Length: 215
Image (cartoon, one colour):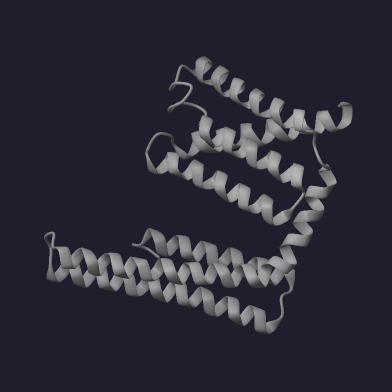
């Protein structure tokens, strides 16, 4: 926890899953399966750290075999995490998706014209804000992240137009991946991405509700 960033992320994710499981009152068997999945990911990360430490001790410099050992250990963590994610989905989906679908249904289905207008307004807003702050260009850098804004605008529109919980979660996951890529490429900071995502989702939600009421 103290030295490994990924281990801290795993622990935070584990706490979140366990709290959700307790809140949803899953069965004892389901809780046990979730706990085992969490423990497998934590153990895999610990083995990965051990392999990296031993490789660095034996081969301080670059070596092709050292790279293979580290990549394989990291791949084992990824495979274990994917398995845990599948287990979590199979157990929690039946509890979460129906409730999430009810929330989406409360907003109703928006019009096609409202979707197009909302995305255009998001793009215009991003350009205006970047011009006002004097940061970045319309397509790169600055406040806010235009890619995050448009991605979350589309994801919000898809969520409200389909009112399907699974499709909504997949769309939001894709928007998150788009936003995360901007962070990994060091084009935007986390704050710029959060602002962009908030602008995209907020404006789209507002415009679609206005079209629903007055369209």
